[in-house]
Image (cartoon, rainbow, N blue to C red):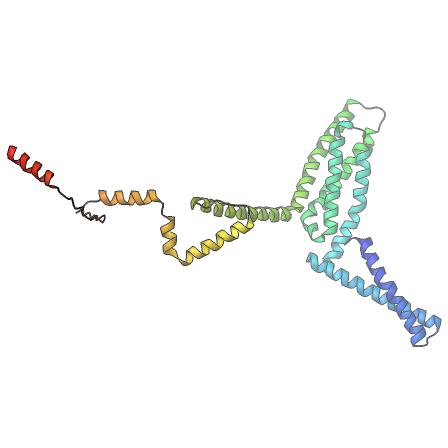
Length: 297
């Protein structure tokens, strides 16, 4: 929590408590004005200390560190704060325009590391190399470069030294960026895990849509339609025979019949289309014609 916000919360809780204690002491218990004021101040101090202890305990528990570790981290952060301020002032005082963007980026990365470790002290152990080595090196190089670049006259040796210093600051900037990535390593891993879970969910949804389209069910964007389709699918699951009969298309039936016809072995065909024989009425003329034809033969 921000220090000012924490102080504001403690004050908001302490002041009403102190006023309430003074009123009770003065009017309810008939204490003198000085005695009631002393009791009020003691009660306010006690409440302020309890609130501070509770907030600090909650902060340490949230960051999973002990009170001793927090004192050690806070001491190093207090030492690094003026160094960061000096470095920012020094880098912006350099009058070399081509390297302005790189210097601004370096300051931004350094301030980001300091802000992250101050907000979450547990990250300090991931940035120990930055606080104990890289920050001091960058500050020393920047101050030397700013001092030499401000000289009115320069010779060849000075120009070479300034050029080497600029190149070294570029390399130090890359090391500081690596320190930032190391501090954010846990967050990057968590983000990659969340991305994998989201991709898995998306692939699962796409797979269900593809299977539904293969079954002949068009995916719909209407929620009510999806509910009706799911109810129908549940109904078909209860009656698997009807589901199988409905799901077999006519082409599959023809193919299955052709396979049966092509299979080896005896083949028996039963004609199920039995039609009644039609009776033909023969007249006398047709009989005579038939007899005449037989006679000719």
